[in-house]
Image (tube, one colour):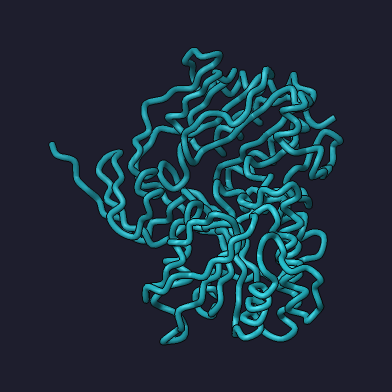
Amino acid sequence: MAKTTERRDAVVCPYCGLYCDDLSVAVSGKVIAVTAKGCPLAKDCFAKIAPPASPRIAGRETSLEAACARAAEILNQSHMPLIAGLACDLAGAKAAMALAERIGAVVDHAGSEALFRNTLALQDQGWIATTFAEVKNRADLVIVAGTDVVSRFPRFFERFVFAPDSLFDPKPVPEIVYLGGKLDTSGGIGPDGRAPASIECETGRLSELFRALRALYRGWALQAQEVAGVPVERLAALAGRIKAARYGIVVWSAADLEEAHGELAVQAICDLVTDANETTRMSGVPLGGSDNVLGAAQVCTWQAGFPLRTGFARGVPHYDPYLYSWRRLIESGEADAVLWISAFKPGDLPFETKVPVIALAAAGSNFVREPEVSIPVGTPGVDHAGHVVRADAVTSLPLHALRESALPRAADVLRAIEVRAGKGPA
């Protein structure tokens, strides 16, 4: 008998922080094909068929119950357990937090290094940021700082910058200006064919560039003839364009700010935005959120009162943005057990360690070094329902199951491990 094909509209794509909610897909058994509104990333990821997979202990297939019991045993014997990755839906993040509190673990997300470039600047001084709806409806100047945007967020320009529908008709096509080095600016070509402006500079010196731009905006004299390789005259012209804009935005992706202290670039951007609001309207748009990093960060704040990089070994939440970095804890050898969660895309572990690893990973993940415990889990928005927080951090979006799947939710596996975890925080 031929399989029936079901059409689904208004599907939320779980594969980048935009979480586009307008896709159409065709579902035939386990096969999912994007038929409308999908980007190449969405089409490729949805088309993957999860292979049959079973839990494993030391490379040998076992039952889910036995794998959860072994995971709990490892965590109970650990003195510094780490629950990281956290690439799962909100329910999974909540379950991870509950387990961390019970066993005295540290929690951190795989994408926290980029996230904390924003978090540290926000903690230090605050910022003026806006939503995708405001970008879509009001922005007439879009400054793109240090990123091409579309390699990480393929439909950003299509959905929010050049969107044909807005509150105001007709809405002028925004002017696009890129700041950075060797950026692919093709995503900023307008529907009218107008090419974006591009100011070439060293991406690692964006903090200097925005400090100079702020000074010029305020009318302060500069002794230098150029900043970060950019003639001061070009920066002065951009400062004038910011003053003339009715609603300007600065877009950045913290993951692309790879200078030694990327938070300084974010801080410089935020200072310029704050000053610009003395005479016009301007906002920042920090792009991120892939693998539900913002969802994990918000769950941690809701439940612990602190951001990610919080530990529970003291019996109460303890936050330290340096000591509790997942990468530092693994590389230093301080973490003596790692529970890694990666439910959205199959892949290898992004680290090497000799300590026991428990991996809750999307089916199809291939590991160079087999974890002590490996439990395949379903992908939110494909194999089961869930919720994620969008990149502008103002809304959570519902994900729906698109196909029948025997793969467990990460949240359910984490709860099963928690039930078997006997120790509480010291």
